[in-house]
Length: 135
Image (cartoon, rainbow, N blue to C red; front, side):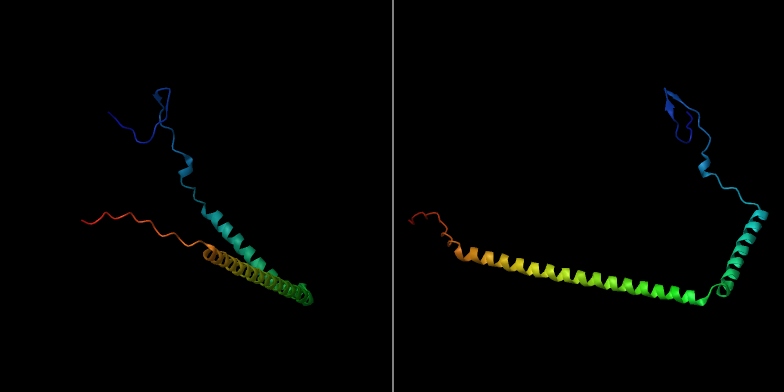
């Protein structure tokens, strides 16, 4: 009796022959050295080009416009901080209102229990079973 490794699909009572291994798990092909060198050189050239562009930027752009941008960013940050402070103050007010409502609820619940305790009829004495007479 021979046992084959792996699962077999059975259809119509007959076993199908094993299929080729899936290509999902095959190793990726290695890139050739000239292509790797070309990619490395292109990436380095792009990096150097961007650095040169950034170094030339102050000559092309008037610094007053950068001051305008920084002022606008400052106003935006100030507005956002004021918005955040307003939201925090609103949350603090809501928390205080919730605490006040909780205090009122506790007072009313305590008052109701006090009224029930005062108005409730005294409990009846428990009935005891009569004792048998002594001999």
